[in-house]
Image (cartoon, rainbow, N blue to C red; front, top):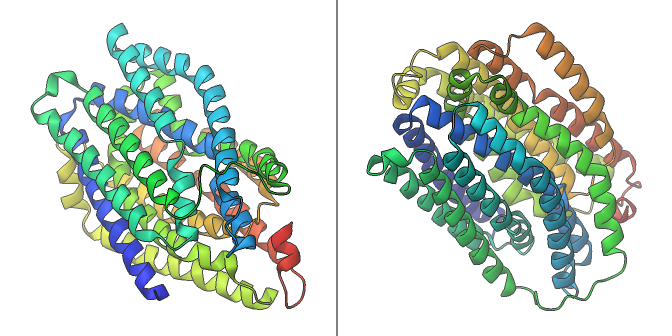
Length: 424
């Protein structure tokens, strides 16, 4: 299949998933009360935090290791199992520490004991159901098996939409309905992806090759602290608003930020379809730089166009969320601008990880500290405008770090050959 065909499959799949997900998010925002939507936002923030932290670059590192051995697939089952084991351990550690915190935040914001306990339980189930999703998706993309990835993702999105629609009939249940739908959909997606991957490689062969364990541990050691910083950037505002009990502001910024999914799917399309080929690209440093610049530049141009369209459609899109959110036009513009910048950084990071360019991740820590000091000093995060500014600017450290990682990765390449760099 040509690259255009692959991009078309991934593009159609991602557009379908994002549109379905956007519809589900709009339904949840419209149908839940402000308080229930705040509980939902806190639960999703915690779920996202654990998923991002437990990932720690493992999926991309599996792709980077396996791509060096292609077309030989021997030992891939052991590599996949090892990455799964590491991710499960990280998720278990952070869930054990974080689940009580989520329960406390929910009760602080008015949830009764039964509601808080049930929401925490469903979130924990979802975390461990999602362990294999990213790993299996990344592995299938290495073998250019985009169809099963998109099919499983679309089915999961439809399941989440159905759960959101159930709120019409079961409105008294509140945030528990969409969260349960999310859990069941994630579980089904994980099973489907693993089944598809088992047709490509022998997942029962758990033998390990060479220094796989050492490489994965090094990736975790380098990227786990960075992912913790990413969690602070992306979910810190929601968790902070939960701590101070700013329920209305939390619901407002979470609902309006739903539309930033539009920018996320653009970078996801490019990374999902093109990162495996970029990982295999064997040319000089100058040609690799040119290709890298073309990929990131393409993402930037498309995202800028999407930002303009989204701004024109602001009155209509805000109206879809309901009366509680229709007047948040300034917040909408700020969040979308930040979402576009964040999507550029995500695309650049995805291409970096596909090449194994993880050196320079340390920059995320000082960059985030500088951002946090300036943002929390200059913006009143307890207002919708202040919280929107904080969220929008939180993507800047990621963009700066991705730039440094690409620079260091290219410098380590030998003239005319990147084999040495790919082994590092």
